Image (tube, rainbow, N blue to C red):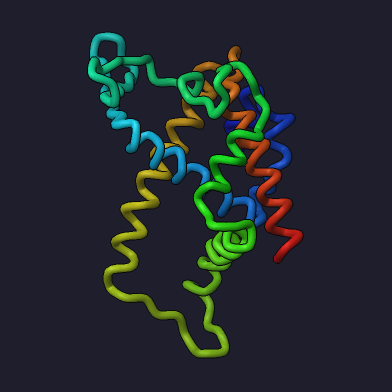
Length: 182
């Protein structure tokens, strides 16, 4: 969010409260969704040594395609310049059977930190040995993606990627909905 605010997206980044666990959980869930989409598209990444830049290879077609990796490559709208968040919101909602389950999942993720750290009415928290390893793997992919996105925004601060506006608009709507139904 700090990178977005500093690199041309302040108007939409301000709608996400970085101190609100619900907002953060929606951002993380959205990043996970994008990572999953990249996996389904059979996208792989490579560093071009001579150009000192990242490229994406997409193998879903018969002929693999190589693209310069930047946030402009991603869009939920058929028109890559369209910043409306509706399709990004629909894509997010499609991960849940209904709105109630989405709100439960978001609120559960938002409260996870507190349950993991603080004792509750049933005593101190505990986790299985497998849980931290699985979560670390999942969070590593998400963290790398978010770090890359922050860097990409700083590298292309003269070009606003429609995807960032789509995603942040959807995050705001989802967070507001989850707060109403919490």
